[in-house]
Length: 127
Image 1 (tube, rainbow, N blue to C red):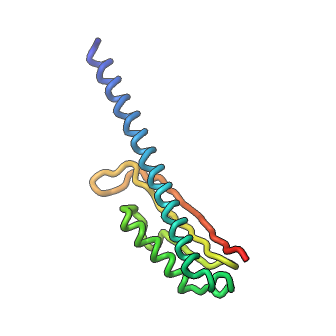
Image 2 (cartoon, rainbow, N blue to C red):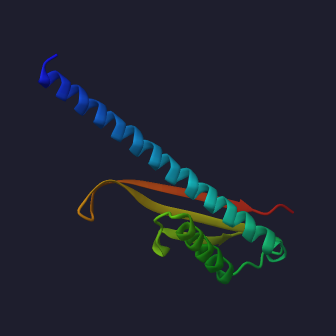
Image 3 (cartoon, rainbow, N blue to C red):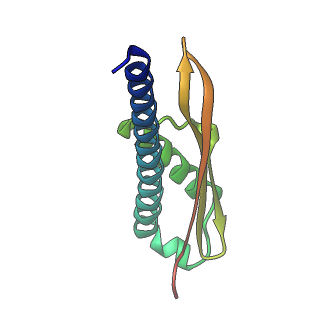
């Protein structure tokens, strides 16, 4: 076997391995963030069920849920900033939207290639 063939084969294996690793981490980031948002919305709905059923939600509740999402993301090691999370009240429930990006290629602290992702979840209380 020639050295050039061995080098190209090894380089191809490393590139394919990196792609699989990056896709797995992006998927983990997406599913972890989705679970976090759904869990936080569910906890807020059980805690504030009375005010949500009466339709008397306020911006304070939305702010509480937004802060809870950001703090839970920090605890779980997800890179969400406060500006990435938008929580609003809708008739009979809450809506949360999270936008963030996953750095696929970083060099010396700067991100060269990022994958933008977002999650939008709504929770409407039944009668």
